[in-house]
Amino acid sequence: MAETIFQKIINKEIPADIVYESENVLAFRDINPKAPVHVLIIPKIEIPTVREIIGSEHAALLGEMYDAANQIAIDEGISDDGFRLVFNCGDNGGQEVYHIHMHLLGGRQMKWPPG
Ligand code: AMP
Image (cartoon, rainbow, N blue to C red; front, side, top):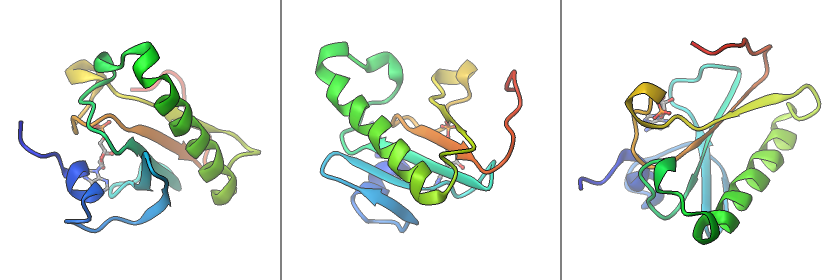
């Protein structure tokens, strides 16, 4: 399968506004932000969609992604007011990039239900 744009960001082949990096997780600002704070949190290993998440195998990695989201929310000053974490999955879910990513959105009131 062709390398995704996020794999190129992991490999530092294309630039991104990186806000967090650890051994297993990378986070950078969305290039087309939908909120005042819009950060994408991704694993460094490629998992195309959340359908490929295997509970025990990926549990620790998902935990790291949620830890990163909480830390970034604090760093960005949106933790106290609240924020939204979203994984889109597949066509109906509106997924465009097939390397799983958690959207961290905040800095404004979110609406429900989402479009
Ligand atoms: P999704 O629709 O859930 O697959 O989200 C993909 C997100 O990646 C969209 O919000 C895009 O704006 C964002 N995106 C695409 N290319 C880049 C890039 N090079 N750097 C940062 N964000 C990107």
